[in-house]
Image (cartoon, rainbow over all chains, first blue to last red):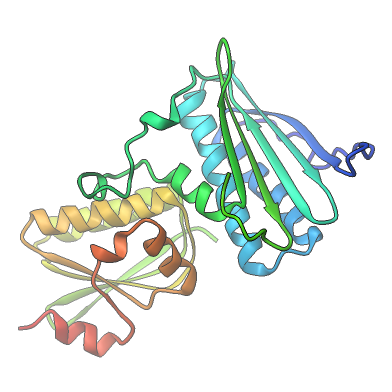
Length: 161
Length: 115
């Protein structure tokens, strides 16, 4: 079973007004998925997001963590997932990095296409993009995938980046 | 709360009352196994009551899809009952509202299966 990292690591405020609230290195396990979700849910609640927004933010983090742990690191005990959380008075930013082989997200089959509709899996990124106000997926060199997600207290008029 | 599944027969329809979370791991596996058991036992009309499902992730959605496929492939029908707003939102986002027949009233849902 994975050792649980401490859930709160408070960091000083930066020049941009964004305060880092957590920077954790987690094992590639389902326990880490639960820990990350729990932490971000608490941060979302403290930020003042309404209950639905808290719920959807925590699902987005869960989906992202599952991608990192299961698809990225493939539950490899030697590979870690880094979870970082920043907050301003108006937003929460969550960044999740894995140590997997990386993937080209443009090549992920579109789960909304008719031929993919009945697939068992492949909807995680769709849900992340739907639930968060901004989502950026970056393939790291030489390895790894970084997903950065932002949720605003008052959603901007524009959609996802 | 982890997933709890109880089954009851109403006429020739097998109703699964689901409560708790359908997420990757125990919850999604339990749901998959229950559907397989019902289909193996010859149940062709399955109604999943989602009224007390508090949380579902993409793995849970995947299990609903698999359950639908498993039932359909055996010549049966799987329908959903009492979707909460959050589950409805997920079916909208994933476009699966075009796949699943959903109901808000159990008696009407049972009747919809026909004799």
